[in-house]
Image (cartoon, rainbow, N blue to C red):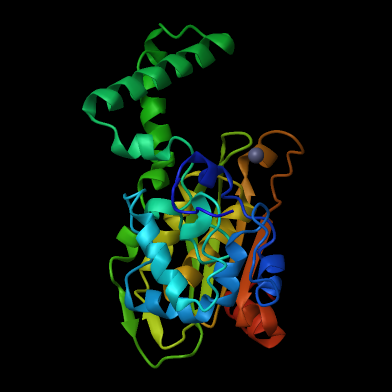
Length: 315
Ligand SMILES: [Zn+2]
């Protein structure tokens, strides 16, 4: 449980999926010594959250993108600001996160996965090789469904599909720090801010088919607001990855919490999953709604309801 900074490696990544953030939050105060395996981030996020976060408000974001190793110093900082030192020394990856869920993770990659850094840092030759591997895979797929990959209509399909897939997953090559790019403004506006009907296209990680829909983001500032256009871009960054809707919703909420330290965040997403519509139960009219509430939205029903009625979900 001791050294946290040393490996921003794969372990941290895999640990990325946080389990109930709620539970973490609730424990924040009581347990400053975190259990090392389960929810390490809680200490950071929970207890020291306010104090630490403040610092992040002044900066664009707390993730420093590509320095996996440099991460340690930052941590230190955080630690100092946080009264409890205990939290800092976690294990590998997540230490660099203050929030209960390692959304903005080591190196600023914002929940990277095993191959994320490799993809990000590849040179032209490696890029070519990646494309070739993908093309081969698509060709195999075509053969397996009973097609002739060499017939005219399909000749360029493997390459087209490979490139399309890379586009669908371009979120792996982005991070919150670059997106926010300093667009955080000190402002005495402490009323609810909502951006609704953000179109979202994502990929179901279980079936590799799209799910699409709309996301609504609301937050209540704490003397700082974020450039409005940044909210859809943050949503886009997390959407352009292999996702499940539940996690996508949560990651967007956590990222905003982390970047801006608002009084609260509420994210609602309604979407239609092709894996439901085209196969399986084939319920074409159904939509799936997920919601993530943090901070004052979690505590106050009235605030939640105000948000829901403003976005029109609460009819
Ligand atoms: Zn699916």
